[in-house]
Amino acid sequence: MSRSSQWLERLWYQPGKTYWPLLPLSWLFGAVSAVRRALFRAGILRQQKLPVPVIIVGNISVGGTGKTPFTLALCQLLRQQGWTPGIISRGYGANIRVPTLVSLQHSAAEVGDEPLLLAQQSGCPVVVCPDRVAAGTFLLANTDCNIIVSDDGLQHYRLARDVEIILLDGSRGLGNGQLLPAGPLREAPWRLATADLVVANSQSLAQADGVMSLQVSAANALVGQNTLAPCAVTLVAGIGNPARFARTAQQAGFTLTQQYYFADHHRFSAADFAAIDGPVLMTEKDAVKCRPFAKNNWFSLGVKAELDPSLSTKLNTILTNLRSSYGA
Image (cartoon, rainbow, N blue to C red; front, top):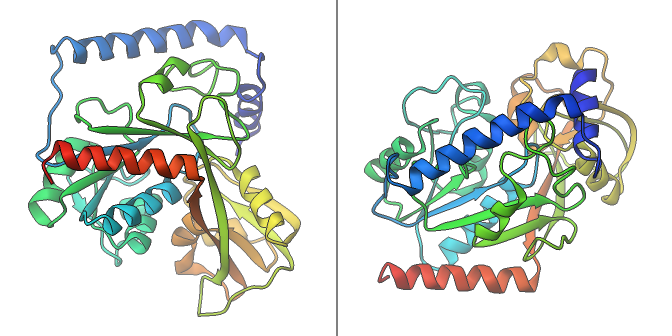
């Protein structure tokens, strides 16, 4: 990450701290967003309804909030309840122009790191396209799914949705509460009240319905079948909130000798590791990009989302009502 990006992010997540010269741009950003929402409410811009239920898993802030592990847990729950879920995603960072069904032979550069990870771990079909309506239509035409989970896309209002789930970073919350670029928010805090479920990742928040904790699984080798027991490692991360990953690794018993942080969705190459000694520990999201040139002492730390009882109860109620509304 550049020094300017690091400085701005630190500013965003200090409650009450605002870089005043950026506020006019934030007001403009908010005005444009408000006009766009109003046009959809008035029917001037039309939402498109797909013939199956659509669940949006998104956030109102930039940076990592845990959407991917939550989406994986949600898809597992949906299958347990008899649904056949499919996933749609933008495919951030990939040059996607038409809907593309993700295969395990794709690279992260071709379809995006998060969609590839979801395809590898969910057991669900995953379609990527910046146009979520086109992605959903393609998914329904080419698979047998009967419910769609949209990974991100909260602000993609053209796609009508039945359920909105918003994730928050429990440790950082809403930061300084300002809209981009003076703060980290894509939409103002009032937007939380319109969601069906608000989930705090790793730490409780007053605005959330409950907490999702990330339970660590094994640290698996990127090459071969080895696992890594807790030891001294070099941490490498190209995610939205690397500090949370560092805490997770330490809680799992790893000692961090060095830490190398890159921008979210960074396109890793072998050159990025020229001065990095192993063993290297990274996230599963980063591993899908690094596996083609990985060394034997590179490992990824897996995590699994677990919902607290109140959150699980509310989510199950939402899904039960959703099934009833579709006569399923």
